[in-house]
Length: 64
Image 1 (tube, rainbow, N blue to C red):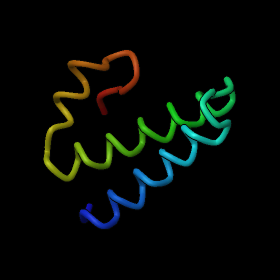
Image 2 (spheres, one colour; image 1 turned 120 degrees about the vertical axis):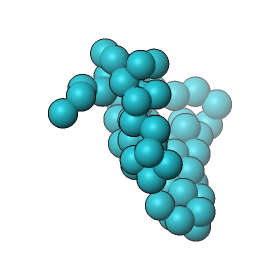
Image 3 (cartoon, rainbow, N blue to C red; image 1 turned 180 degrees about the horizontal axis):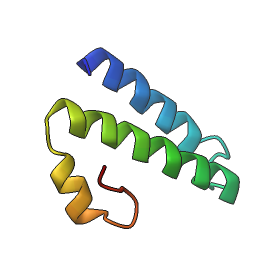
């Protein structure tokens, strides 16, 4: 994943975070959690660190 693509993904995340001004509703929070899980997985695959995700977030990510 290129830095420009990561930047664009972070902009999307920030838009979700600030959609409701200074509060985040539950639907936006769930959307952001899903979005971040996918983004972190993409970056982990790029840097070959999926093992860290499996260790730190075993309840979120499953080993294939």
